[in-house]
Image (cartoon, rainbow, N blue to C red; front, top):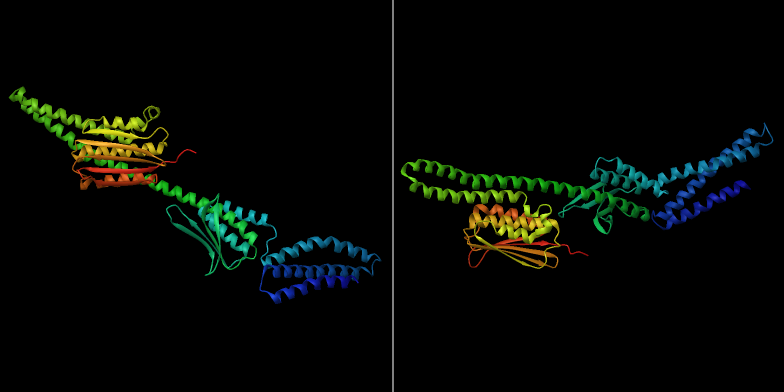
Length: 416
């Protein structure tokens, strides 16, 4: 009677599985039914063999062989069932413990030397967990670029899932074919989104480091050029004028006076150039506590008071709540533009206009000079780079009445 009940217990799932497999393709339901049927059949065979084997071997020795066989079969039932179920799950690619799978993926990620290697390892682990022919992750990097991590062949018609981290799209997950376990796929997609976020942060950090190195080299090149092309010739001319004045002393004081007057004028120009070089490295008006006292408007008015063409400053709107990065960028742009006007434009007047608008700061520097010399075009590229670093825009053009106008607009995040 016991054997009949065991056979019926095994035959029932087998018949249902055969019917399911005959009416549909390899769906998850058919695989689950077949999985259970095979586990039940193997479990019945193993436990039955142990039970009847003990009875056959122990009956000649003791009358309690049936009781011993029942106890042994009962003790073996659970461990044998767990082992057979695990083997069947590995055979059919079914993961019954998502936490164990998540822990396995996390260990692979933590053992990786970097974010990119971690994502590649997580993609490989995801492919094995899903038993898919191929899995691919496409990460959207800063600047619109993308990077692809793949394991296996995805094919022409993959299943696509977006990877989102805190409401921001990190890219997408592509899985070859139709996944067997959609819930498991969603869980793995959330884990992959976190690793993709780390890859994106790493790429952003690398890009920022490259831009910092580029900016540093540009600043060094600018300083070297200003010293060599600007201050160097001025000091050489002063030395020559001193020699000329020393030689002219023999002709009387009247002959020396024009030379000394010219030397005084060139010395004043050299002092202005040195001050502009120092202020370009770190403007004192934006340093430490002076920032709270002067702010951007005060710093620009201090800049306008330097010797040279008359520079007016016009401010529209409050500037007290500007972010520090916007203040420094606006001042540096105005400083370089005004320095170009004083050195090369041959202008008599210039105007710095600052207009605070909702969500932005507009800065313009206009002069009545001869325009931007061809050899100073790289200075315009540097100003454009400063504006674009903060997501702003830069334009320069020739004014209708003569001269050049530089217009920069920088984004400003309004307080909540």
